[in-house]
Picture 1 (cartoon, helix red, strand yellow):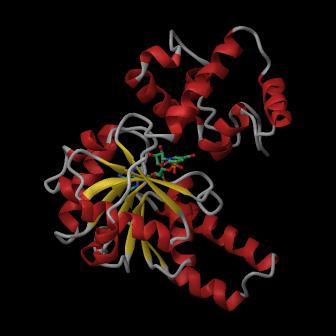
Picture 2 (cartoon, rainbow, N blue to C red):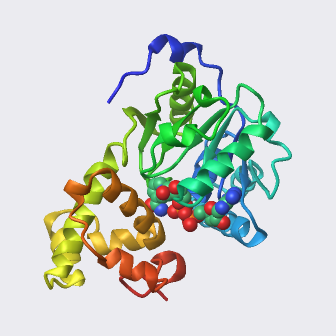
Length: 294
Ligand code: NAD
C-alpha cells in the first residue's frame, strides 16, 4: 500500500463531472454512488436494454433510501437527473474522469479505452475498474498512459467502502491524486496499491475461490461449505459470493489470476467456475449459478 503525495492531493483539480463505461452490476453501482454524492455522471453502454438495467439498479437503491426514510421523492428525482444514460461518446469532452467498467476481458477493455481516449480532453483521467487485469498492460493501448490508473470498486458499490487505486508503471501522481479525490468525494476509502494481477484484495480472494474449487473436486457439497463459512462469521460463503460477483466475471478473473500466479491457484483442468460458465449459469445476473434465483 502506497501513500499518495499530500501536496498532489491538495493541488489536484476537483472532479466535477464524470462518466462510467458499462451499466452492469458495477457501472450501475458507480453511477448511483456518484450521483447520490452530487457528482454528475454519464453512463455509457452498447444498447438501450443494458442502459435500462443500470438505471433500474439506481432506482431500486434510491427507493430503498426512501423506504428507510433517508430521502424523499423530490431528492430521489434530483439524484436521478445526475445520471445521464448514453450510447455515444458525444459529451465526453466535458468530463474530468472516466471509470471503465465493461466486461473483464483485456482485448475489449483495451479497445474501449483507446476509443474513449479519442473522445475526452487531453487532461481527462481514465481509470479502469478491472478486478485483475494489469493496469500497465491496459495502458499500452493509450496515447497518454500517464493519465490512466486503476479505480477498483467492490460489489455492491453503495455498501463497500474500499476502493483500490492502482498505480501502473506510467500513471502520473496527478492521475492518482485526482482518482483518490474522486473516491473520497464518493464517500469511499481509497488505498493506493501497486500493479499486479488481482492487486491486493483479489490476490487474497481468488486463491480462496481456488481452494473452494479444489474442495468441490474432493467431493465437498457447496451448500455445506457456504453454511460453514457463514458460521465461521463471514457474511456469505464462496458459492453465494461467486453468484453475486457473476460467474462470467469470476471465470475471466480466475483465468487472469491462474496465469499470473500458477503456483498459488491450484489450477489444473476444469474447475467448478469454468463448468458453470460453460453452462451459461452466470449467477444472480441471469438467475442461475451455483444456486437458482426466481
Ligand atoms: P456486467 O457483466 O454486469 O456488466 C458489463 C457491462 O459492460 C454490460 O452492461 C455490457 O453491456 C457492457 N459493455 C460491454 N462492452 C461494452 C462497450 N464496448 N462499451 C460500453 N459498455 C460495454 O459486469 P460487472 O460485474 O459490472 O463487471 C464490470 C467490470 O467490473 C469488470 O472488469 C469486473 O471485473 C469489474 N468488477 C466486478 C465486480 C463484481 O463483483 N461483479 C467487482 C469489482 C470489479
